[in-house]
Image (cartoon, rainbow, N blue to C red; front, side, top):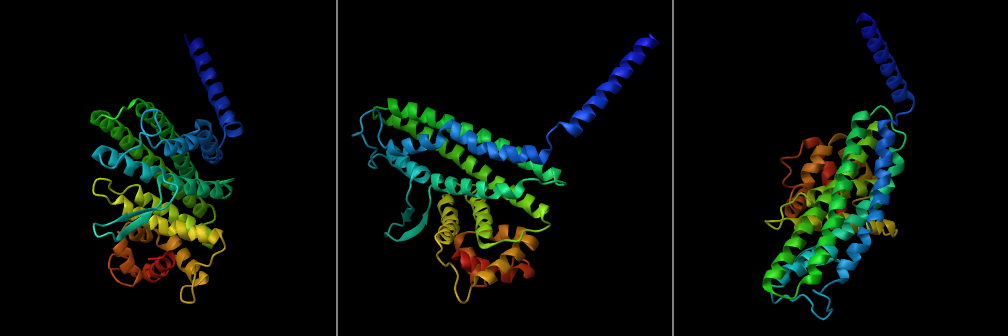
Length: 332
């Protein structure tokens, strides 16, 4: 009996040693796996063909197989479908009005938000390569990347289901109600994808900050960071009480600055210079990141007041001057 016990113990020791050697020599480190997972997102999204599916759905502005059967705003269900299609699929800026015909806000569709989020993720990839000593962050990044991939698969499946449903609709109110449910489900799933993208951007910036002890922002990086933070706020806002368009409007302000910078258009002034902006942004990000998130979580009117030096009681004193500067450059 003792002979067999010795054999079992010996084998156990060999297995432990072998696993240790494998883990040390062959097992990919967490930072490598995390980096590869983020890289794979782009390829995976392309393999699903979701971008092409969304473009096709944008063009599919009718029901059944007859292109003359356009959705009509005369029906409440169809009016809601038209609105959801615009929110998710429009390739132009969306504008909302009050009963008097005055503009209440303007914002971008989910597809436009997603495209910019993809651009930012791709731009940040080189910064998160070859990171060591920050295992907890890279593990979190790997987890978010996995969650993003899963939500995007759900988005692709929802588009397929919606297309199948829309193709069978003949125009009855019951059918339109079912189709509206499909569009509503697609919106929820798409928002989840965008929120996961915002989490991914935030975690990538956390890794960059940990890798270099702090983040030294240039204008483009600062605007990318602001976009990710604002995207997170917009995709967590309440659909039921119609908060989303107003937070999406604030997100558009950031995207507008990104577009202008990419086109070499000056977004600064003699009062609010690029040097002042970067000095303020680096202070906010590296010392008062949570205060900046707190400010971005406020509604537009509150941000405007903060930009004017008012309504700052919830913001720590050390962050206030930097916050005012940044909000003014962003357009509040």
